[in-house]
Image 1 (tube, rainbow over the protein chains, first blue to last red):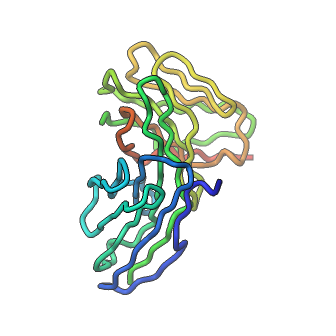
Image 2 (cartoon, each protein chain N blue to C red):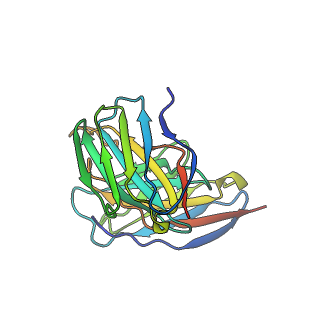
Length: 117
Length: 109
């Protein structure tokens, strides 16, 4: 199992350019998440998905769009990049836990370091 | 989601036991307490989760008092490789986690 993978690992954009970050998981997880982490800060939730074809806004959704066309993939798009979007982006996935399950573990990818100049 | 408060940083010598306490005064009945570890340039990694009393695994122990308004992550005999940021999170199953700034643990030789 590769777990959670993210593409690309690094990217430099100019202001106004667009790009898509790809997250893939091979654990058959229902839930997927996109976070951003700025230097010295904790992670902030951008968007998440509770299943194929569904998405929801997190804490900081402005300037980003997402799509979950396939269960194993979760795409994060930046339509018009801004310097304020310079950050490390983490994708994560998890099972939908059942009533009898105490497990609440999210599995994280290695991150994508994005710089917008 | 319940807000958590934890120390910004802690220092420890190798071989010592480290206890990191997290306060979550507004924890709800259905909330679980989860701890994650993050090394530089890596995504967070699940350490341990609990609801009440004590939970132990091969990495750490989690102590939760009866009122559940706080919890303590205990790392036995830390080594240099335990230097990381540790996050305490509180939330209901199947809802997104909210990460604070965490506790930066520095282990000194």
